Length: 361
Ligand code: BGC
Image (cartoon, rainbow, N blue to C red; front, side, top):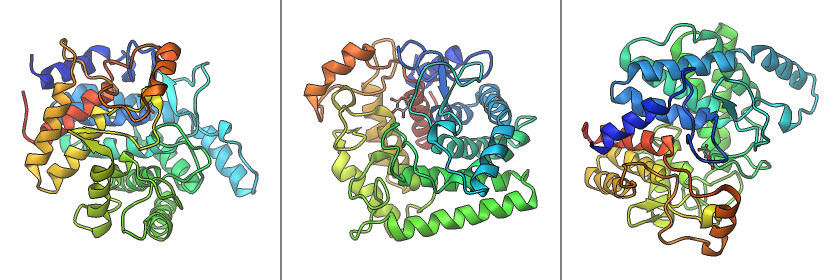
Protein backbone atom coordinates (compact mmCIF):
# COMPACT_ATOMS: atom_id res chain seq x y z
CA UNK A 1 0.00 0.00 0.00
CA UNK A 2 1.37 3.48 -0.83
CA UNK A 3 1.97 5.91 2.01
CA UNK A 4 -0.86 8.11 0.67
CA UNK A 5 -3.26 5.17 0.83
CA UNK A 6 -1.95 4.06 4.23
CA UNK A 7 -2.23 7.60 5.62
CA UNK A 8 -5.84 7.85 4.48
CA UNK A 9 -6.50 4.44 5.96
CA UNK A 10 -4.97 5.36 9.35
CA UNK A 11 -6.97 8.58 9.46
CA UNK A 12 -10.23 6.85 8.51
CA UNK A 13 -9.70 3.82 10.72
CA UNK A 14 -9.04 5.78 13.88
CA UNK A 15 -11.60 8.56 13.37
CA UNK A 16 -14.11 8.20 16.21
CA UNK A 17 -17.81 7.64 15.44
CA UNK A 18 -18.31 11.17 16.84
CA UNK A 19 -16.13 12.58 14.01
CA UNK A 20 -13.19 13.43 16.28
CA UNK A 21 -9.67 12.51 15.18
CA UNK A 22 -7.58 11.12 18.05
CA UNK A 23 -4.09 12.67 18.06
CA UNK A 24 -2.55 9.21 18.44
CA UNK A 25 -4.72 6.19 19.23
CA UNK A 26 -2.18 4.33 21.33
CA UNK A 27 0.11 6.93 22.93
CA UNK A 28 -0.33 7.09 26.70
CA UNK A 29 -0.64 10.85 27.10
CA UNK A 30 -2.81 11.51 24.04
CA UNK A 31 -5.10 8.46 24.00
CA UNK A 32 -8.78 9.39 23.93
CA UNK A 33 -8.22 13.06 23.09
CA UNK A 34 -8.59 15.20 19.98
CA UNK A 35 -6.87 18.55 19.45
CA UNK A 36 -8.36 21.18 17.15
CA UNK A 37 -4.85 22.01 15.87
CA UNK A 38 -3.99 18.43 14.92
CA UNK A 39 -7.50 17.68 13.72
CA UNK A 40 -7.65 20.70 11.42
CA UNK A 41 -4.52 19.63 9.53
CA UNK A 42 -5.63 15.99 9.50
CA UNK A 43 -8.99 17.03 8.03
CA UNK A 44 -7.22 19.17 5.44
CA UNK A 45 -5.19 16.16 4.31
CA UNK A 46 -8.31 13.97 4.16
CA UNK A 47 -10.28 16.68 2.33
CA UNK A 48 -7.57 17.06 -0.31
CA UNK A 49 -7.58 13.33 -1.04
CA UNK A 50 -11.34 12.96 -1.42
CA UNK A 51 -12.35 11.78 2.06
CA UNK A 52 -15.10 14.41 2.07
CA UNK A 53 -17.29 12.49 4.52
CA UNK A 54 -14.46 12.10 7.02
CA UNK A 55 -13.54 15.79 6.90
CA UNK A 56 -17.22 16.76 7.07
CA UNK A 57 -17.66 14.63 10.18
CA UNK A 58 -14.63 16.20 11.86
CA UNK A 59 -15.82 19.73 11.09
CA UNK A 60 -19.35 18.97 12.25
CA UNK A 61 -17.96 17.51 15.49
CA UNK A 62 -15.71 20.55 16.05
CA UNK A 63 -18.55 22.95 15.35
CA UNK A 64 -20.76 21.15 17.87
CA UNK A 65 -18.03 21.05 20.51
CA UNK A 66 -17.21 24.75 20.10
CA UNK A 67 -20.85 25.81 19.65
CA UNK A 68 -21.77 24.01 22.89
CA UNK A 69 -19.51 26.51 24.62
CA UNK A 70 -21.31 29.60 23.31
CA UNK A 71 -22.60 30.40 26.82
CA UNK A 72 -19.14 30.08 28.33
CA UNK A 73 -17.72 32.37 25.63
CA UNK A 74 -20.45 34.97 26.24
CA UNK A 75 -19.66 34.92 29.96
CA UNK A 76 -15.91 35.25 29.31
CA UNK A 77 -16.43 38.14 26.90
CA UNK A 78 -18.70 39.91 29.41
CA UNK A 79 -16.17 39.47 32.22
CA UNK A 80 -13.36 40.79 30.02
CA UNK A 81 -15.53 43.79 29.06
CA UNK A 82 -15.94 44.57 32.78
CA UNK A 83 -12.16 44.51 33.13
CA UNK A 84 -12.16 41.35 35.23
CA UNK A 85 -8.90 39.36 35.07
CA UNK A 86 -9.65 35.85 33.76
CA UNK A 87 -7.24 33.05 34.74
CA UNK A 88 -5.97 30.93 31.82
CA UNK A 89 -7.56 27.84 33.37
CA UNK A 90 -11.02 29.35 32.81
CA UNK A 91 -10.56 29.80 29.06
CA UNK A 92 -11.70 27.16 26.54
CA UNK A 93 -9.83 23.83 26.54
CA UNK A 94 -7.00 22.89 24.19
CA UNK A 95 -8.11 19.33 23.63
CA UNK A 96 -11.37 17.43 24.00
CA UNK A 97 -12.29 13.83 24.63
CA UNK A 98 -13.56 12.06 21.52
CA UNK A 99 -17.08 12.70 22.84
CA UNK A 100 -16.36 16.42 22.95
CA UNK A 101 -16.04 17.16 26.65
CA UNK A 102 -13.07 18.65 28.45
CA UNK A 103 -11.87 15.41 30.07
CA UNK A 104 -10.56 14.84 33.56
CA UNK A 105 -6.80 14.76 32.88
CA UNK A 106 -4.82 17.93 33.52
CA UNK A 107 -3.32 19.54 30.39
CA UNK A 108 -1.59 22.73 29.28
CA UNK A 109 -4.91 24.35 28.61
CA UNK A 110 -5.44 27.67 27.01
CA UNK A 111 -4.16 27.69 23.48
CA UNK A 112 -5.86 29.95 20.96
CA UNK A 113 -4.28 28.64 17.76
CA UNK A 114 -6.42 25.51 17.41
CA UNK A 115 -9.63 27.54 17.18
CA UNK A 116 -8.14 29.65 14.38
CA UNK A 117 -6.68 26.66 12.57
CA UNK A 118 -10.00 24.87 12.72
CA UNK A 119 -11.80 27.85 11.12
CA UNK A 120 -9.12 28.03 8.44
CA UNK A 121 -9.44 24.31 7.62
CA UNK A 122 -13.24 24.45 7.59
CA UNK A 123 -13.18 27.27 5.07
CA UNK A 124 -10.62 25.44 2.88
CA UNK A 125 -12.77 22.31 2.94
CA UNK A 126 -15.96 24.21 2.18
CA UNK A 127 -14.37 26.13 -0.70
CA UNK A 128 -12.82 22.97 -2.16
CA UNK A 129 -15.96 20.88 -2.12
CA UNK A 130 -18.45 23.64 -2.65
CA UNK A 131 -20.35 23.30 0.61
CA UNK A 132 -19.82 23.43 4.36
CA UNK A 133 -21.22 20.61 6.49
CA UNK A 134 -24.66 21.48 7.83
CA UNK A 135 -25.05 23.13 11.20
CA UNK A 136 -21.61 24.66 11.63
CA UNK A 137 -22.76 28.28 11.98
CA UNK A 138 -23.05 28.37 15.75
CA UNK A 139 -19.58 26.88 16.20
CA UNK A 140 -18.05 29.29 13.68
CA UNK A 141 -19.65 32.30 15.33
CA UNK A 142 -18.63 31.14 18.80
CA UNK A 143 -15.01 30.59 17.76
CA UNK A 144 -14.92 33.97 16.00
CA UNK A 145 -16.32 35.80 19.03
CA UNK A 146 -13.82 34.07 21.29
CA UNK A 147 -10.82 34.84 19.08
CA UNK A 148 -11.91 38.43 18.39
CA UNK A 149 -12.13 39.08 22.12
CA UNK A 150 -8.99 37.31 23.30
CA UNK A 151 -6.46 37.23 20.43
CA UNK A 152 -4.06 39.56 22.23
CA UNK A 153 -3.71 37.39 25.36
CA UNK A 154 -0.56 35.34 26.00
CA UNK A 155 -1.25 31.59 25.83
CA UNK A 156 0.54 28.28 25.34
CA UNK A 157 2.03 27.79 21.87
CA UNK A 158 1.76 24.92 19.33
CA UNK A 159 4.05 22.89 21.61
CA UNK A 160 2.02 23.67 24.72
CA UNK A 161 4.80 25.73 26.27
CA UNK A 162 5.43 29.30 27.46
CA UNK A 163 2.02 30.42 28.68
CA UNK A 164 3.48 33.85 29.44
CA UNK A 165 4.37 34.71 25.83
CA UNK A 166 2.52 35.92 22.75
CA UNK A 167 3.48 33.45 20.06
CA UNK A 168 3.67 34.62 16.48
CA UNK A 169 2.49 31.29 15.05
CA UNK A 170 -0.57 31.52 17.31
CA UNK A 171 -1.27 35.06 16.11
CA UNK A 172 -0.94 33.82 12.52
CA UNK A 173 -3.47 31.04 13.15
CA UNK A 174 -5.95 33.46 14.70
CA UNK A 175 -5.47 35.91 11.81
CA UNK A 176 -6.20 33.16 9.28
CA UNK A 177 -9.11 31.79 11.30
CA UNK A 178 -10.89 35.11 11.61
CA UNK A 179 -10.48 35.84 7.90
CA UNK A 180 -11.88 32.39 7.18
CA UNK A 181 -14.83 32.91 9.53
CA UNK A 182 -15.70 36.15 7.77
CA UNK A 183 -15.39 34.46 4.36
CA UNK A 184 -17.78 31.69 5.43
CA UNK A 185 -20.47 34.36 5.49
CA UNK A 186 -22.19 33.42 8.74
CA UNK A 187 -21.03 36.24 11.03
CA UNK A 188 -23.36 39.07 11.99
CA UNK A 189 -22.34 42.61 11.07
CA UNK A 190 -20.96 43.29 14.53
CA UNK A 191 -19.12 39.95 14.63
CA UNK A 192 -17.59 40.71 11.22
CA UNK A 193 -16.51 44.14 12.38
CA UNK A 194 -14.91 42.71 15.54
CA UNK A 195 -13.14 40.02 13.48
CA UNK A 196 -11.87 42.67 11.06
CA UNK A 197 -10.52 44.78 13.91
CA UNK A 198 -8.75 41.78 15.39
CA UNK A 199 -7.22 40.87 12.02
CA UNK A 200 -5.89 44.41 11.62
CA UNK A 201 -4.69 44.43 15.23
CA UNK A 202 -2.75 41.20 14.75
CA UNK A 203 -1.15 42.36 11.51
CA UNK A 204 -0.06 45.63 13.14
CA UNK A 205 1.24 44.00 16.30
CA UNK A 206 3.29 41.39 14.45
CA UNK A 207 4.70 44.01 12.07
CA UNK A 208 5.79 46.13 15.05
CA UNK A 209 6.99 43.49 17.50
CA UNK A 210 7.16 40.15 15.74
CA UNK A 211 9.88 40.76 13.15
CA UNK A 212 13.64 40.77 13.91
CA UNK A 213 16.02 43.42 12.57
CA UNK A 214 17.17 40.73 10.09
CA UNK A 215 13.62 40.67 8.76
CA UNK A 216 12.23 37.27 9.80
CA UNK A 217 9.45 36.40 12.24
CA UNK A 218 10.22 35.73 15.90
CA UNK A 219 9.03 32.69 17.90
CA UNK A 220 7.34 35.10 20.31
CA UNK A 221 6.97 38.86 20.50
CA UNK A 222 10.20 40.39 21.71
CA UNK A 223 12.26 37.16 21.48
CA UNK A 224 15.03 36.27 19.06
CA UNK A 225 14.54 32.52 18.58
CA UNK A 226 12.84 30.97 15.57
CA UNK A 227 10.40 28.10 15.70
CA UNK A 228 9.31 25.83 12.88
CA UNK A 229 5.67 26.64 13.64
CA UNK A 230 6.41 30.09 12.14
CA UNK A 231 6.37 28.48 8.70
CA UNK A 232 2.59 28.35 8.97
CA UNK A 233 2.47 32.17 9.09
CA UNK A 234 3.55 32.04 5.45
CA UNK A 235 1.86 28.90 4.11
CA UNK A 236 -0.92 28.18 4.85
CA UNK A 237 -1.99 31.13 7.05
CA UNK A 238 -0.76 33.88 4.72
CA UNK A 239 -0.01 36.44 7.44
CA UNK A 240 3.02 37.10 5.24
CA UNK A 241 2.81 35.56 1.77
CA UNK A 242 5.78 33.70 0.32
CA UNK A 243 6.54 36.63 -1.99
CA UNK A 244 6.80 39.12 0.90
CA UNK A 245 10.36 39.69 2.18
CA UNK A 246 9.33 38.73 5.75
CA UNK A 247 7.69 35.52 4.51
CA UNK A 248 10.68 34.57 2.38
CA UNK A 249 13.17 35.41 5.17
CA UNK A 250 11.17 33.38 7.71
CA UNK A 251 11.12 30.23 5.58
CA UNK A 252 14.83 30.64 4.81
CA UNK A 253 15.76 31.19 8.46
CA UNK A 254 13.72 28.24 9.74
CA UNK A 255 15.33 26.02 7.13
CA UNK A 256 18.82 27.31 7.91
CA UNK A 257 18.49 26.92 11.67
CA UNK A 258 16.16 23.95 12.08
CA UNK A 259 16.25 21.65 9.05
CA UNK A 260 18.72 18.78 8.82
CA UNK A 261 18.83 16.24 5.98
CA UNK A 262 15.10 16.61 5.27
CA UNK A 263 13.98 16.51 8.92
CA UNK A 264 12.93 19.62 10.84
CA UNK A 265 13.40 20.39 14.54
CA UNK A 266 10.75 22.37 16.42
CA UNK A 267 13.21 24.89 17.92
CA UNK A 268 16.81 24.72 19.08
CA UNK A 269 16.11 24.54 22.83
CA UNK A 270 13.71 21.58 22.44
CA UNK A 271 14.23 18.78 24.99
CA UNK A 272 10.96 16.77 24.54
CA UNK A 273 12.08 13.14 23.94
CA UNK A 274 15.57 14.59 23.51
CA UNK A 275 14.48 17.02 20.79
CA UNK A 276 14.24 15.03 17.56
CA UNK A 277 13.04 16.01 14.08
CA UNK A 278 9.30 16.09 13.38
CA UNK A 279 7.98 14.64 10.11
CA UNK A 280 4.95 16.92 10.25
CA UNK A 281 7.30 19.93 10.18
CA UNK A 282 9.06 18.53 7.13
CA UNK A 283 5.58 18.49 5.62
CA UNK A 284 5.06 22.14 6.55
CA UNK A 285 8.43 23.21 5.16
CA UNK A 286 7.87 21.19 1.98
CA UNK A 287 4.44 22.79 1.59
CA UNK A 288 6.08 26.21 1.75
CA UNK A 289 8.63 25.19 -0.87
CA UNK A 290 5.93 23.78 -3.13
CA UNK A 291 3.83 26.95 -2.93
CA UNK A 292 6.89 29.07 -3.70
CA UNK A 293 7.53 26.94 -6.80
CA UNK A 294 10.52 25.01 -5.39
CA UNK A 295 9.23 21.56 -6.25
CA UNK A 296 12.54 19.73 -6.06
CA UNK A 297 13.07 20.86 -2.46
CA UNK A 298 9.45 20.06 -1.62
CA UNK A 299 9.86 16.53 -3.03
CA UNK A 300 13.00 16.04 -0.93
CA UNK A 301 11.02 16.75 2.25
CA UNK A 302 8.23 14.41 1.15
CA UNK A 303 10.84 11.72 0.55
CA UNK A 304 12.34 12.20 4.00
CA UNK A 305 8.91 11.94 5.60
CA UNK A 306 8.21 8.68 3.80
CA UNK A 307 11.56 7.28 4.90
CA UNK A 308 10.53 7.73 8.57
CA UNK A 309 7.56 5.36 8.34
CA UNK A 310 7.64 2.12 10.31
CA UNK A 311 7.57 -1.15 8.32
CA UNK A 312 3.76 -0.99 8.70
CA UNK A 313 3.74 2.50 7.18
CA UNK A 314 2.99 4.45 10.36
CA UNK A 315 4.51 7.91 10.84
CA UNK A 316 5.79 8.94 14.27
CA UNK A 317 5.55 12.30 16.01
CA UNK A 318 9.34 12.65 16.02
CA UNK A 319 12.43 10.77 14.95
CA UNK A 320 15.44 10.01 17.15
CA UNK A 321 18.33 10.44 14.63
CA UNK A 322 20.54 13.32 15.74
CA UNK A 323 18.91 14.76 18.87
CA UNK A 324 19.29 18.31 20.16
CA UNK A 325 19.35 17.17 23.80
CA UNK A 326 20.09 13.41 23.83
CA UNK A 327 20.45 13.34 27.62
CA UNK A 328 16.77 14.29 27.97
CA UNK A 329 15.31 11.41 25.95
CA UNK A 330 15.21 8.76 28.60
CA UNK A 331 13.09 10.76 31.07
CA UNK A 332 10.30 11.02 28.49
CA UNK A 333 10.52 7.37 27.54
CA UNK A 334 10.12 6.53 31.21
CA UNK A 335 7.30 9.02 31.71
CA UNK A 336 5.14 8.44 28.60
CA UNK A 337 6.62 5.40 26.79
CA UNK A 338 7.76 5.22 23.14
CA UNK A 339 7.20 8.24 20.85
CA UNK A 340 3.57 8.60 19.63
CA UNK A 341 3.17 6.36 16.54
CA UNK A 342 1.11 6.68 14.46
CA UNK A 343 0.59 10.40 14.95
CA UNK A 344 -2.40 11.29 12.79
CA UNK A 345 -1.15 14.86 12.31
CA UNK A 346 2.05 13.46 10.69
CA UNK A 347 -0.12 11.49 8.27
CA UNK A 348 -2.27 14.56 7.60
CA UNK A 349 0.79 16.62 6.70
CA UNK A 350 2.08 13.85 4.46
CA UNK A 351 -1.23 13.92 2.59
CA UNK A 352 -1.11 17.70 2.22
CA UNK A 353 2.43 17.78 0.85
CA UNK A 354 1.74 14.80 -1.41
CA UNK A 355 -1.25 16.66 -2.81
CA UNK A 356 0.81 19.82 -3.37
CA UNK A 357 3.17 17.69 -5.47
CA UNK A 358 0.44 15.82 -7.30
CA UNK A 359 1.28 12.51 -5.59
CA UNK A 360 -2.04 10.71 -5.34
CA UNK A 361 -1.06 7.11 -4.72
C1 BGC B 1 2.44 18.64 20.79
C2 BGC B 1 1.23 19.36 20.26
C3 BGC B 1 0.20 18.38 19.74
C4 BGC B 1 -0.08 17.29 20.74
C5 BGC B 1 -0.96 16.21 20.17
C6 BGC B 1 2.01 17.59 21.79
O1 BGC B 1 3.14 16.88 22.27
O2 BGC B 1 3.31 19.56 21.42
O3 BGC B 1 1.59 20.22 19.21
O4 BGC B 1 -0.97 19.07 19.43
O5 BGC B 1 1.11 16.70 21.16
O6 BGC B 1 -0.41 15.65 19.01
